[in-house]
Image (cartoon, rainbow, N blue to C red; front, side):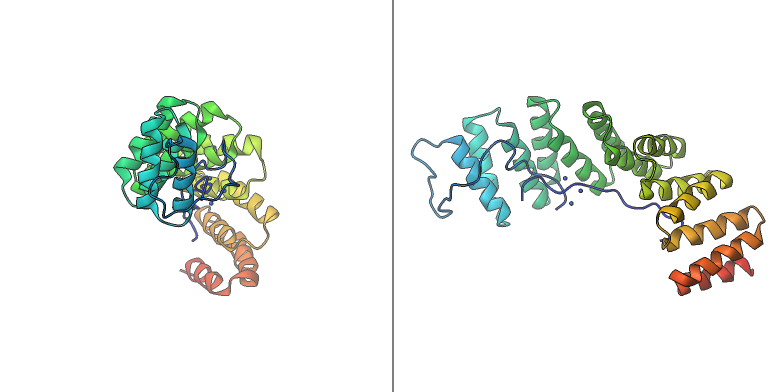
Amino acid sequence: MPNSLRKTVFPVLISLFIFIPAFSSAGTELSSGEKHNLNTKEVSPDNNPETLYKMGVELSKSGKNKEAVHYFKKTITIRPNFVIAHNDLGVAYLEMGKNKDAIMSFKRAIKIKPDFVPAYSNLSFLYNRMGRHKEEIASYKSLIKINPLNTETYYNLGVAYGKMHKLDNAITAYKKVLAIDPDHVDTLYNLGVVYSKSGMNDEAIAAYEKVVQIKPGSSDAYFNLGINYLNQGDRISAMKEYRELQKTNPPLAAKLLDIIEQ
């Protein structure tokens, strides 16, 4: 939608993070070749934690999260430091809407392994969904310490700052993305939005111009260019954007023309 930030980008739940909303770590340490009878009450005589964990993963993949919770909890009872089991328990809770329990599980995984990226990513996703952007931002900052070259983390950080109306911080985060990937089109678009909200029309126009160079069919960028030109009193340039917009999105072009003619 014109003049609005594009959404946060999340990888998918690692098991069942770029996209299911949180990630389980299934497959990061264990092979998945062995099949199990999901109706068996006791998975193995010795309650082997790897076997229990695999059972939890299979159940979670089947959408049986309540049952998966049982096996993940049994796994970590036997092996308390089984970090991916804590994370996947959090994912199962998340899918069940038990946000408080999910947060506790992800935090336990992080306590065991402070650089465990999936748990931080899942926390970020959950905090975003709950509207807890301050905690979301803290989680992104932890991810950046682990991997300072991940463009999606900086991008999501910029979106979170934008939602909190911390526009200078959002600009800084978006510039970090562009320092790594100068053609990251969603970042350029969002940077244009933030510049526009900050009254920085020249900078906004430059950002949107680059968007349409990279992605010529970007209707929202043409619309926002027209608005920013109008903010500068440049009706001729606004009409030029209107004509470009007619080629890709006639209804949106009509809205821009109505604004131009007011």
